[in-house]
Length: 436
Image (cartoon, rainbow, N blue to C red):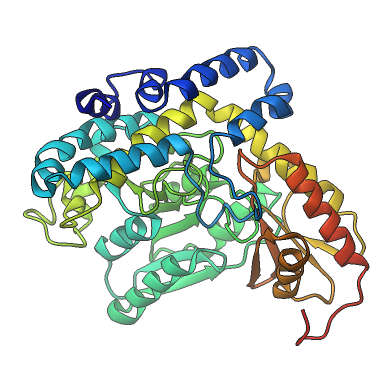
């Protein structure tokens, strides 16, 4: 492959189809044909077009023996993204210090522009890093908070973020105010009121998780942000599971600060992420790692990570192209259709306990189900033992079930096996705590 074209593609100089052609001409030709066939279909019709999504499945290196329904933890990359990553990696190894630092690193600004366009913000507000944990921890530890300042957060936020805030509480004597969000979340006013009631005149930060990873419930972040701003608070949004999952722009959240993992729903290489900070607020966040101006106003101060995987970073551009070609709205419709396909049936099973909303506004791909008397680990083990279906057990606060997360490559046969397995489990005698 022509190296110059590959670097231009990452910088956004070529179209998505041109980029895919440089990686795999046959794939690019058939992808264009399939997209043309589905282009004029309604979102509802497109979401149920098994011919199209069956072809998309062929663009992944899906295991023929294991049904992966835990895409929420980390998603597999489309083969074109894997190929891009491998080629950049091979390129780097020809002369690492030269090709990584002097050639590939020059593609970062093109990639930054591409990410900013996808996110709907300025490139000067985007830092490229390794995951949501790194981005959010950078913000949490970088904010100027003092003893007595309060932070409002939820018991369903991600542990890495809760632990970061607990460290600041222990070290800096800030005060954490916890709220308990009902599962499922289906009432915006109720949720906003919970956050509002927790805010005092000492509250500086409201930390909100856009989509609760344990249950898949979508939180009304914009309404919360608008309320918090009126009370003089800043808002941090954890978008680890929302970005690339359903269609929105960062400004739609009302966030002052936000971070996400690109290796989840965007399908970028493992260990790739994005952090957003409003331009006028960058100077207020100290760099987590060494920087010439740790309190400066340049977003790039957060990218002083030392040697990093340039191959991984540069292949993010291919993942963006793949996402854009499918279409964010079309992808969202398909993911929600897949969740509804299995969860609507499963919710009617005997002893079923569902904590995920079936209302389109409040959930998309992620669903969570449990059965009365069953431990989630037992359900997870039974599904894998009998059907080789990989899910993940969730036990946190009031959520007690398995999390099921299909992706665009998941077909209905996979979900039929899931439904069959869940149906069998619902009829079995409740096992003892020590049995499977």
